[in-house]
Structures are given as C-alpha cells and as structure tokens.
Image 1 (cartoon, helix red, strand yellow):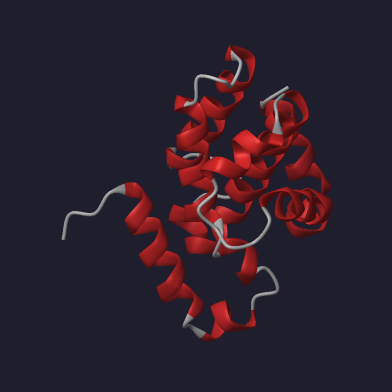
Image 2 (cartoon, rainbow, N blue to C red):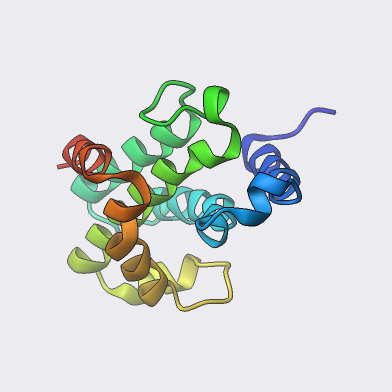
Length: 143
C-alpha cells in the first residue's frame, strides 16, 4: 500500500502502541502527537503571516521529521524514534508562538488539546524525555 509520510507515521505509531513496549512507554501520549505536529508544521510553513525567519525553522523541523538520519532514528528504534521529532516540533512551534500571534498556530491545529499548553508541556519534559545532550543538540539545530 502506498501511503504518504503522514499516514505511514500515524499507522506505525498506532501499531507500535499496541505492543507490550508501546503500551508501557512513559512517552506514548507524546508519540501520538507526532503526525498532528507534522501536519501543523506543514500548515504553518505555507501561512503568509509567518515570517521567513520562522519558516526557515519550520522547514528545518519538517526536514528533520522526514530524514531517516536524526539523533534517534526511527529505522533503529522504531516509532519511539519520533520522540526527538516531537520535541523539535514543539520547540519550533513555541518559537513561532513567541514571534507571531498564537491565534495563527491555533487556526492550523487539528488536535483537540490546546496547542499552546501542549507545546509548553512537551518543551518542559523534553530534557527528561530525550536526555539533556540530545535536547541541547536539537535546540542548537534551529537557533
């Protein structure tokens, strides 16, 4: 079956969450957000109200999602490898919300939770989720 990246990611994560490891993962709720955060980044990349400097960060986060080579590669670790992608997406979206009207981000968010609270929650736990070294490397990628 030919699936686009978004759909494949969603299926892979949902299937993994049905496994014993997935069910017991402390970070499952964040992994479920990966496809929606990817979708949000794609929408923000096309929004005319987002400044070019922020679009460059967004493009970097999108490329990071798609790239098979990253700090926690999905090829080696399975869907748990999306944790670094989720953290980077939250970091970039947080940056966008600081420099733009947060209503722009809310307008493009397809999820049910408040995106502002959700992004802050992810940023707050990212160092614990990934380890300080990986979190610091991710933040440096988009500065």
